Image (tube, rainbow, N blue to C red; front, side, top):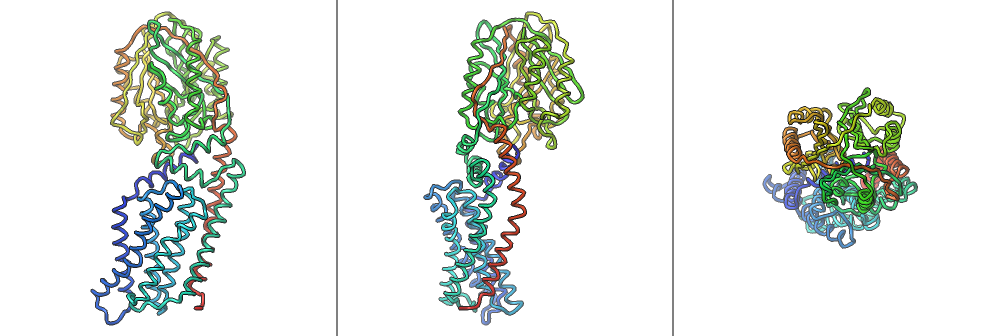
Length: 607
C-alpha cells in the first residue's frame, strides 16, 4: 500500500529535526540578524553603523526572538493540555523557528521596498507576516496534533499576538527609530479580518479534500495523518483503531509443514496467506517475527500469496493464525518419505518443488525480474491445480518475494505471469519419494545491521533439508523484498558450502518500512556482511542435520479481520484522488487568500 507507506518519508524529516537548544540559538541569531538588516536598510539619521547593529539586533531579538521562544514553549504545553499528540517541545520550538524565519524574511522585504519606493510598509509587512505564520501554524497543528480546527486556531494565535504586542511596546516606547506609530483600530482591523480570511480558506480546503474519505470509509483524513505520524515518530498503535473500524472479516489459508525428531517438534515451516503490513508495528506488519516467536521450535514464517488487502487490522489478529497453526499441528500425520528438491521454469516464472509424502511445497519467484505480492486468488489457483494434478493431500504455496523492482507491481488475475506460473506447475514430474530425511536449522540475528539496511528483528534463518543425498537450503530473510540480482549472488555463495540446491525468500515484513521511502529491500547496502551472516546461518544448519519425520497440512483461518479487498482498494484510490485534487485546489485557494489578505493589509485606509 504505497499511499500508506509513503508516510514513512515524512517520519524521516520529523526524526531529524534539530534539538531544542539548536533551535533556540538559531532563533536568537536569526532575529538579531533580521533586526540588524532592517536598521541597516532603514536610513535612520544620527545613528552610527555600530549603533545600527546594536539597536537593530536588539529590536529584532525583542520583536521576533523573545516572542518566538516563548511561543515554542507555551504552545507545546497548551497542545498537551488539550490531549494533542505528536507535538514535543523539540517540534514546537522548531515550528516557532520556521514561523519566525518566514516573518523575518517578509519584514526585510518590506523594509527594502519601503526604502526603494519611499513608503512606510514595515509595519504592514510585519502584520502580513504574522497573518501568514498564523495560517501556517493552524495548518500544521490541525493536520498533526488531533486537537481539531477551533483549538488549533486559538493556539496558533499565540506567536502572532506576542509579536504584535512586542511591536506595540517597542514603537510606543520609541525604541524603533523612525518606524511610524501604529493606529490600534487599524491594526486590529487588519489582523482580525486577515486572520479570518486565512482561517476560512484553510477550513474550506481541508473539509473539501477530507469529504471523500469521510463519505467512502467514515474516517477523517487528518486523523489518519496524525495517527500515522504518531506511529512513525513514537511507535503508537492508535492507528489500529481506524483500521479496525474499516476492516473486513475474511477467510484465508495457512500452510504448515512440521518436522519432528524423536517425537519432539524440531522445526516448523509456515506459509500464511495473510500479508505482513501495512508498516512499522501496526496491524500485521511485524507478523513473521511475532508469529515465529510464539512457537518453541525453530520456525520459518514465509510469505504466502497475499496482498495488502489481507493486512491484519491489529496485532491481536495474529492470535488467530497462531491458534489455527497449533490446531493443525495436532492433526498432522508424519512420515519419513520425501523427494528431492526440483526446479522448473516457464519464461519469467520459476518454481522450486519438494514433495513430503502426500504433500507438496511450491516456492514461486520471478527473479531476477522484479515482482511484488502474488494475489491470494492466484495462489489458490496454483494450490488447487497442483493438488489435483499430482494427487496430493495438501499443496503449500510460497511467494519467495525476492526480486525488487520499483516499476513492477502485484501479480494479479489476467497478468501473463499468472499463466507462466501455472504452466511451470504443469511441467512438474512427480518424483520418487524415499524414506530418510534429515533437517538442520540455523539463524543469525545480523546484529550489526538494522532496518536501515532492510533487516527485520529476526535476521536470517536457514533450514537445510537432506533427502536422497541431496542437500537443499531454504534461506529466509526477515526483510521486505530483495534487491534485484542479490538472490542469485547469495545462491552462488551458498552453493560453495556443500549444498546442491538453494532458494532464497523474504518474509515481506513491513516493520522495515518506517524509514526513507515506502520500500526498503535488503541488499541495497552491506551486501558482503549479509552474505557472511547468511553463510554463518547455513553452516549452523548443516552441522545441525538430524533424522526427522515430516508432515503437512493446510488449514483455513476463519473470521480474521483484515483491510479487505474493498476497503483496501477504496483507501488507496481515495487518498490518491485527494492528493491529485489537492495539487490543483491548494494553489488556487491559498493564492487567492494571500492576494485578498495582501490587498486588505496594504491598501486598507487608516481609520
